[in-house]
Amino acid sequence: MRILLLGSGGREHAFAWKIAQSSMLDELFIAPGNAGTRNHGKNLSFSPSDFNAVRKNVIELNIDMVVVGPEEPLVLGIYDYFLRDPELCKIPVIGPSKLGAQLEGSKDFAKQFMHRHNIPTAKYATFTQDSLEDGLKFLANMKGPYVLKADGLAAGKGVLIIQDLEEAQAELTSMLSHAKFGEASQKVIIEQFLTGIELSVFVITDGDSFKLLPEAKDYKRIGEGDTGLNTGGMGAISPVPFADAAFMDKVHNRIIVPTVKGLKQEVIPYKGFIFFGLINVKGDPYVIEYNCRMGDPETEVVIPRLKSDILDLFEGVATNTLSERDIEFYDKSAATVMMVSGGYPENYEKGKPIYGLNAVIESMVFHAGTASDGPSVLTAGGRVLSVTSYGRNLDAALEKTYDSISKISFEGAYFRKDLGFDVL
Ligand code: AMP
Ligand code: GLY
Image (tube, rainbow, N blue to C red; front, top):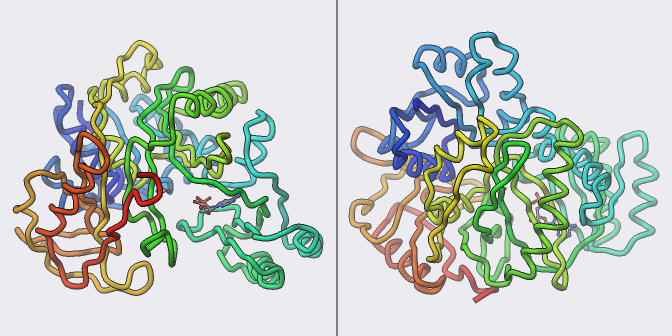
């Protein structure tokens, strides 16, 4: 198969690494990719959301299948774009339809979907500029902390958790009346605050059946002990110790099955990954959010734990035969720690040379934000490298990762040293 993989982060490097191991692969292209993905295929320099460029390259390069990493092209409707085009309509896209991607692209859509299918989630109400006054009253009548969510995509920044009522009211006003998150906050969801520990659960589905992937837990805050600003993710572990069989049974029965069935019942085409952002409230799982793609950095631990050929699974998705495919996992644990640029998630510099990559033998180094300059590798983003290791348990995997990180350096490099602190 000739595969085009869209995206440029650690998630896509992990996908590229895995796809490159497939016996079904003829050639892999990554757009735009990074300095790591070029080791597994050919990088192409166009944006995944530039559908004209995608189209041109798919036709010229005789691509057999397109695998979509990030949410943006999915929410923009790349799946439907392919179906509508006579030259592209036979080429499968791994990812949901535009409507299916609304599970991530609109929090209001996701909430209504969960409501229709009785899927456990925080209680909520939705407000627009016209109902701002009602929203302010709604806040005044509830107890904090106040959870405010911009309805649309806001680059991971659209969720505010606020202790103080007046501050929450000011933020609601700023979101609805002053477009704090642009179009994304034309609608705002106000949600009940849930207390518990979070985890990420993933399935791949062909729209009929699904396969469960290993669960993971990511560490979102910049500071140790989960303090400071939110980031795209500072590391992840898999498996998650508290996700035992009893808990995962509840996730399966109350959340995954009703979601997949609900999509089918509502005739929402969905052939790709579903990411369930869950919270464990006293032993019961609730959905915090859906994403229409794999997680990052979760992919950097989930995909290494997948033993099966990933293209066999993708082919099962494309041909509606996923239920006939075997899926196997490695029993070992995996941990990844993100090395980030100094200053991230606020201002940071790019273009710093990265040293020591070749000295790492015992870990996989997935590039998140890197660029190549001839043979050298430079930092090109906030999150730079995701260093993943296997271990017989999480402690062993983390130890190996921290040992590998000690061999890598770039100016201003920062990483969290406490991964797993809350579950180990
Ligand atoms: P999201 O962008 O939806 O993943 O939300 C970002 C983060 O906000 C989540 O990972 C949670 O830590 C937190 N969060 C979102 N919704 C709630 C909620 N209802 N109760 C408590 N925390 C929440
Ligand atoms: N790690 C969370 C996400 O990918 O959204």
